Image 1 (tube, rainbow, N blue to C red):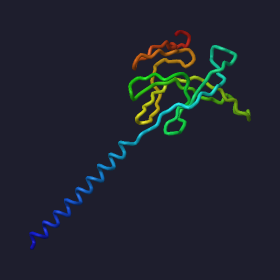
Image 2 (image 1 turned 180 degrees about the vertical axis):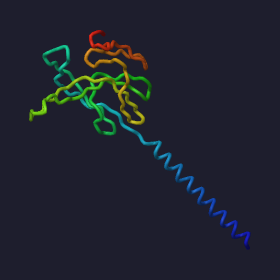
Image 3 (image 1 turned 180 degrees about the horizontal axis):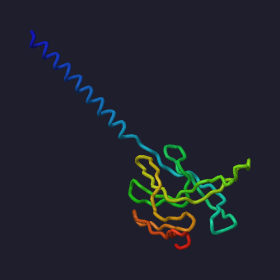
Image 4 (image 1 turned 135 degrees about the vertical axis):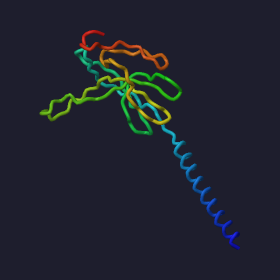
Length: 157
């Protein structure tokens, strides 16, 4: 009889081990299959103040939506780096009012480039050294960017 009870105990332990392994594997599968939706919203006309032009110009921005939530505002068309990654130019709204002014003065400005991962939904800034949002224009080829930046003194490009 002692032999039969030890066999039952081993069977229970192995069943618990299999159950635990199935729970761990199912949680990994559920976590791995989470799909993110990365889309662009509709174009919005805005007034644009650049450093070189004194009168404002009209441009268009659109929201970058990840899982239905606005992550950033962008300008221009995206550039595909891989089937998973793309870059797009950032636009942001800034309050140009002084602290003693009660009414905010919102202004749209161009920013740097954003790197967007379609699979994870992650949006991060792309590092382009010496890139100036007002004076630099980037030309993309696959995952390379060619652009003119400003020098350390801010006078030479």
